[in-house]
Amino acid sequence: MGLTFGGAAVLAAVGRAVNEARAAEAVPPLTPDGDEARRWAEQELSDPVYDIAEPTPFDRIARAIAEFFENLFSTELSGQWGSAVAVVAAIVVIIVIVVAFAVWGVPRASRRAPGRAPALFGDEEHRSAAELRAAAASHARSGDWDAAIVLHFRALARGCTERGVVDTPPGATVHTFARAAGRAFPALADRLEAAATAFDDVRYLRRPGTAELYRLVSDTDAAVVAARPAVREEVPA
View 1 (cartoon, rainbow, N blue to C red):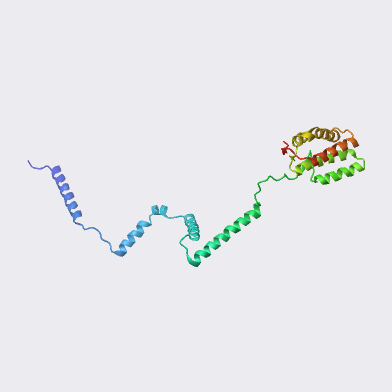
View 2: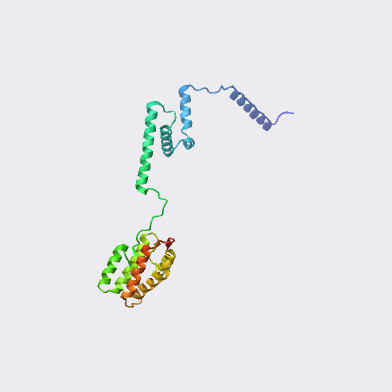
């Protein structure tokens, strides 16, 4: 039986495919020369995908710094260079320590007394205890007992703060201070409360001050100055 036209066409196509495959197998592999190989490599490496593997400028800087310190403290250095580097490193460390002490001061184990608060019992007050006592005495000599009592009680409180015995923050009341001072000086607790009441009567209740009330406050202040505190107290604001 003869092949039909369609069958013959199929056989012809298969024959051509077989011949092309044999021809491809006969082609020898490409072997470029040196210039051609370099050109191919440059074309391949120019692909953006290889940029990911390149170090960034930050990576280069970090590496340079790391290598600097590695070389600075390398144990492979010897002779005069090794000694010079060791001396320079020691000097740098000493300078850093000196600067740190100059800026932050020498650490202290003991607690420092708190500084003067800008406000005391509702008013701005920057004077020291000694200055307040002197001002109170001046008012007492002129018979201005109201001012003398107020100023001397402020001197009492400021003195406790300067000694680091009772910290009196802005906003603290005289009776809050008196209770805290009474815990620091238990034997004087009642007198401190009486002195605070005298301050309140004159400063807020507008009751007239007297020489007796002034002596109560000044004597209490003198007793506190002479006494040794039992504990340090912080007055809540």
